[in-house]
Length: 293
Image 1: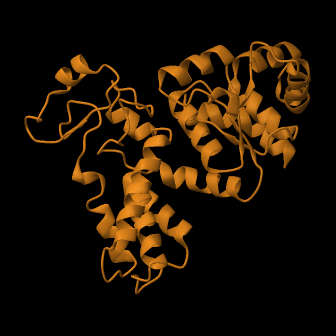
Image 2: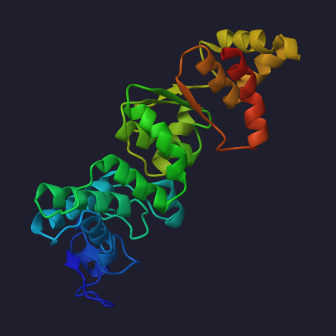
């Protein structure tokens, strides 16, 4: 049911629900799910067309715009969008078929799709040589986190990469790990309690199979615990780390666990620092990095 008149739809969603409980409804209002708003494609469609030097906006470019928006709705919502719409469940389904207007991924997603369609349809007079680089440039112009995660994702795209996330229970980390699994061939390794990770994936509207996409290291119960604390002790025993300290650290400090995994070759890289101070994070992992190098 597309009731798009504003400010009063032709039929209110409540009336539709009363008549058909399983109806899928879209309106032009922001206070109901599935808002149909022209800001979903404007000015992004023009950005892609202008960057490619398109002589027109043809049907292929319009279709590419629609496909890009539809694909974005199916993807896991970004941490930025989730922060803006914190009280809403941004999980693809009847209540979320259309991305939100403030989803910062609209610019790079729509503009790059339109530019590609302009080139494929012959409308472009300035073809973009590297669409991936173009998309990343747009990403970086929208939100700062893209600048941080871009090299991480580039490494993962080059081949199978085992990336360990130290704060695996954090919502931002979970969203980044899902994006890594969706967009690259990398394997996210999360350090955290499995039941907590599963619960938070569900609570934050992440895909139902999200937890199954991760390798999870449970700091409270892992068969490698003894190997890990012995490795940590061997690396730092000359700095005053006793066996008791090593055992305690490898039960409570997820950054230390992640650093040991990289040191042992069980992960290729480490993402940490989402929780806590940078000084504490750096000091925890530095010993393992120095010893490995």
